[in-house]
Length: 184
Length: 339
Figure (cartoon, each protein chain N blue to C red):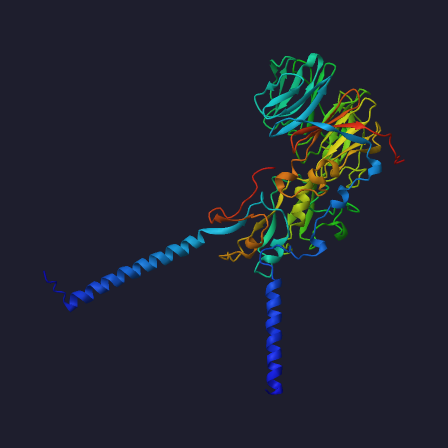
């Protein structure tokens, strides 16, 4: 049977095909873009070994990784090993006694003998020195997290590549932080 | 070829070489470390080295493998060793006792009666392993971390409520000890992590660790604070970190055997609290002799070893990381005097 394809019909079907293809491409592009946005990089604090790579391997001049503090886990210790040098001269706020090289941890008296510690993110470079001190002797309430207000969410995160303990993981945007639940 | 052309080729060649070296030196895998200076490095390995002259005990070659995934506490009574963990008590030289939950502490009384702290209540078992009592819970916040039996008194350290509870043998609360009270000059217990130990010394006073204050405090049974000793310090004489010692035991001569976490070390103090020497240092207790604090967060908090002693002065260290009991005996007299 002979198929009488007219020029008009041919053009109409081409237009339909083209339109459907364009819709498909647009949907695929939107889906892939959405999929990329569904996940962000984060550090699993239970895998992190506080190696210091987060401070220097981020593509940003100032690393997007910062120390965070879960106060509910903190012992509010007078002698905080995340705040003080291993052998402090005195338990005061003198720079010589502080562990953090950039002075990014604040210490505030609450009531005897408890003190509250907080991170100044503008000063924190994510070196994890305090994390190591806190984890070694304390409850591990100081730990590193990728701060999403500055992370570029690179497809291939350079810190993730350089992470020796595979602590960098992709997490959903609906839960972008991996906060420790309780004392470990 | 002109002179300028030669120069250009030299420059191009040099650029290629420099570029190649730069690419070769770039470490994208992190293998060469963070590149941060020493001021960004946390290193306490020096403090993990123990002066051999201070070590007064030697470890016996045999060890007891508890076979437990999570062992928490040890007690010694006569020839029997009791290890609590994994919802049970393993009795070396006796029959195991199954428990309703995870134990954190235990003590053995007259006739082999076993008192066990499970979360916030005490369970009592006969010498044959039969449950003969479950005492009322100390409340939602209660977390029992140590028990001591002395005559008709049972003392329980409640880390959750930061107080010592004194019971009679039937499980009735007699009084509470150590609650913050300025009129009695009691500052209260500071317990940042769930380690809070106690024991009764031969002088008839209760000794309780105040870990956040790095000291051992002596109380009468009525709750009067008599005296205390202990200083913070990462050096061998002091108690390191935020909150130590985590556990202790009292030898027959009245001296104290203390255990610290962080830098895991077992040390000896005389009955007045003067440092006498070392039972075992970090280099002897941590696998491979690695004298560093820890690597993974989970490792950091698993160093709360427990300790017990017998009437011969033998020291039993429960290595909670590897689940084994290690034995230490005296080898020399104290070589130092810190006076």
